[in-house]
Length: 89
Image (cartoon, rainbow, N blue to C red; front, side, top):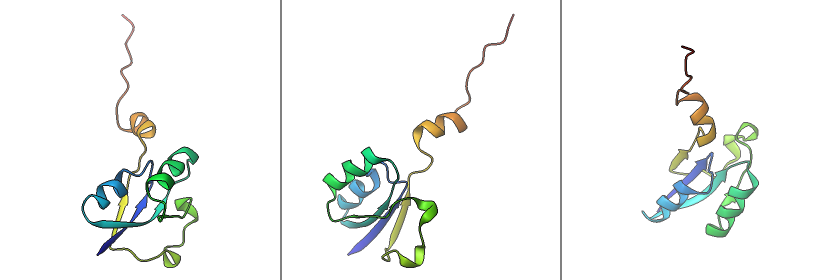
């Protein structure tokens, strides 16, 4: 059985895809309260390890796959998608 850890987990999109493909989500790193509550309902056995900048990888349960959902959409729009700025005539 393969296992996974999810960084920048959000509402658990990667863990959901994992279980649908026979992979067991073991832990997730997320800081936003609402997404954490969503994943606690969907994956009650999954360990929530908190803020990625405070993690010590040596203390995490080992996994076969690590996923990452960063940057979050609101940041991606600011960084990746150029904003249209009309030029004065």
